[in-house]
Image 1 (tube, one colour):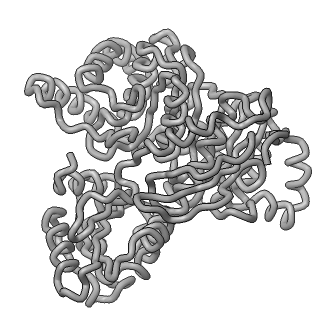
Image 2 (cartoon, rainbow, N blue to C red):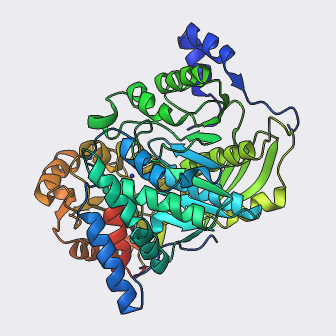
Image 3 (cartoon, helix red, strand yellow):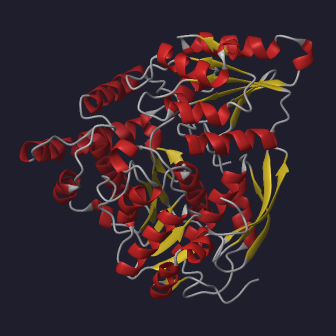
Length: 494
């Protein structure tokens, strides 16, 4: 298109499934012998009217293609596009990221770390918060609108050539993926950090052979396309693991971990597992984020300030660090930590818009793009830990195909009241349908219905300011990346 410190899923798996010990024995594990701001990054519309007009024309052409949720599981079309473009994705090494939650934040952290070591980076993530140009970044900054337009126009004849030779036209996401790979080759970048859109095996991004494959926590999402259990979903996501690569595996449900480790054996990869080869050693809440100590593949990295909230972001940081160490050969060719000062500086620069992001004070308004139950649980835990709200008002606008009940149930313990609304996307859940589910979860007296997002924000802020005894009240806007992006614009952050 997102974890605990002591007991790893792999440990639990061995206790519950004797075969897993055999699987692990067949897979090399990465064990080091030694060692016991990136900016806001959300661009506004182009100031030049002509550039804005040209960008809107490109956006309109892209919108006329299959959307990101309409899929024909195949990489044949993107492979054909890469072929006629001269295989631009082979021009640089890459780090490929899959998983259910945490992909974009992890990608941003990996990008920041690589940039801190003076490598030129390209990053491809989805979906965007506000501007389509966010999806393609060079050196930590979204591609300029002019360059985005130029890249599209450069490859447009080749897109049309592939369209005419295939049973189905290239989709919106496939075209953007082609643009990203072409832009990275043209820059040129030293390394690409690539987030899958959905799944893995047949995702359009999967025409790269990444030397490092990253798997963030797997949970239930897109179950109609990927499977109804973590294990079924893991089968699809394991498709990004290529022969001889290094796999950085975040903590996983037992059945998902088993699938990943089996795939690792099949393609002879090196595996590093959170909670075993790397992980979070310690963390404490700090002003503006948290202070963490991470165990990497080469040793410990102490007192790292991470300007992001929530335990899940500390775990994302551990995964990102291990991925970058693996990219540099730490734990394999090298058995030492990377430069501590460089690592600290990189993490301190990280920004992840729309992920427990504070966009207003008095009252405090926080945005979080949680859109499935696992993401909502992480968000709820993070906001409870990091913000001392005496009363929290939720603003929720969700997509129709999501597990909306599960998402609302995750937030129910922390929301005093919830304002349900609807974003502008065609995928948005009808506000009355959302309200019906919300009433079942929260009760009628805790649910406010506002069909327009601007009215919903105003209602929530009013509720937060309602009584003087609730001077410490706050607002959390969540449920969808689109809802968060639109709220961000309405609150003056665009």
